[in-house]
Length: 119
Image (cartoon, rainbow, N blue to C red; front, side, top):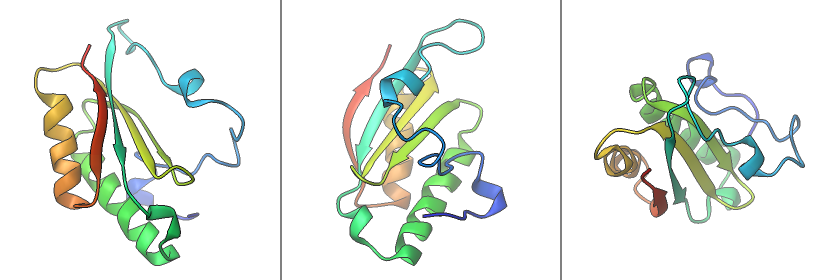
């Protein structure tokens, strides 16, 4: 997956070489910097890992662009290519756990919301 354009590195970055054995549940923040609980959702992107390098890069750029539009509420995002899963933790706001996945689905139509945890 490697290099992402500089505009998108903040949103999704390749950490597989940095934290390969750290489970997601240990990396996901539970609260924001003010101690408020975060909300989470998970999306499946079927077959992503089997696509060519350019298609994967294009999908990551689309995801990053959506997350950039919501940078004021996105606290954490993890794209697991092995499992084709996107995990996003956000500051809690009414309706946002549906609005943001809908925006992701608009950019990446094959993305499916499979779980959310509106705190």
